[in-house]
Image (cartoon, rainbow, N blue to C red; front, side, top):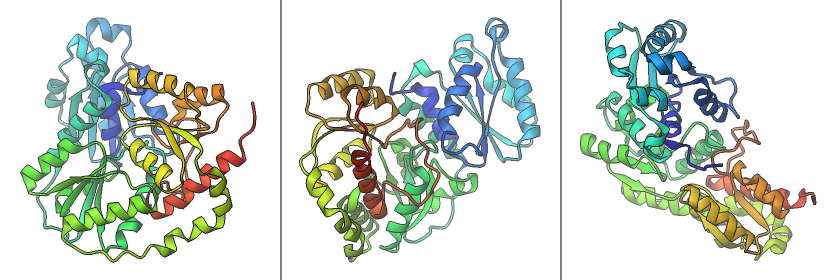
Length: 382
C-alpha cells in the first residue's frame, strides 16, 4: 500500500484541521470515504465533511450542478463559519469551474477552495498549499509575549490530542505559551495565529511559516518532534533561545518513571529495531538509540513508494526484533514475527481516545517507553 496519499489527502488533512469548518469534497464517494475513514478512526463524533458524490453522469456531463447543490445544502445544514472545498481528480480532469460556481452563489458562510487532484502532487505538497490557501484568513493582531505557534500537525495524526497537550505542558515549564496549533485549531485561533512571537515548524508547513515571516514579521524555526526527555529538553532550549528567554532545566522529576522499569530496559538494551515514518521517524530513532539503548538498524523517513519497498527489503535482511511505524507495517511485522509499535500516520487498527497518554514531550517519554515494554511482554508467538 502506498504511504503517500497524494495531494488530495494532504489538502484534506490540512483543511480538516480547522475544527469548526466543514470540508466539502468535490469527488466520487470512494475518495471521500477514504479520507473520512482515516480522519475519524479515533474521533467518530467529529464528522465535518460532505461530498458532492460524483457518479458516471457527472463524469460525462460535468459536476458543476452537483457542486452547486452541495454548497447550498452545506450552507444550510452546518452551523460553522467556514466551508472548505477540495476538488479532487475527476473535477480536475473534466475541468469543472469550481471557483465560478462559488462566486455565483450568495452563501452565508465564507468559502475557500483548492484544486487537489491526487496525481498532481504529494501529500506534503497538498498540505503546504492548503495552509497557504487558508493564510489570507489571518488577521494582524497584537503580539502575545512569550507565545509560539506549532505548525505541522494534522487532526488524524496518531496521539495528536495528547501530544499537543503534553507539548503545551512541557512548554509551560519554560513559561512559554502555545498560541495556535496548525492544523488542529479553531477558525478563530487560526485567524489569531499572527499574535505569536515565533513559529515552530515540525516537518511540514514551512511555506506557511515563510509567508507569515514575510507578511507579519514572525520568525520561524524548524525543530525535531520532541520525543524523549533529552529530545524535549533540546526542543525547549531551542525555542527559549529563539525567543531570547532563558530556561533553567530541572528534569529530575521527568525521569523518575524510568527507574521503575530499569531491569526491563536493561534487558532490552542493544535490541535491533527498525523505524519508518514521516518527519517523526528520525527524532523517534534518536530517542530509541540515545535514551533507551536500542540499536536502530534500518531507518526510513522519505515516505515514497520506492522507500517503502527498500525499507521492507532492508528489514528482512536485518536482525530487527521490533518495528516502529504505521498500520502499513502490520503485515511485515507478522511475516517476521516481531512486535509493531504504531506511532506514525496512518494508524487504522488502533484508537487513541485518552488525551493524557502522549508519545511526545516529557510525559510522552514515559508513556512511549511503557508502550514499548508492554509490546514486548505481551507479544504472542505466531
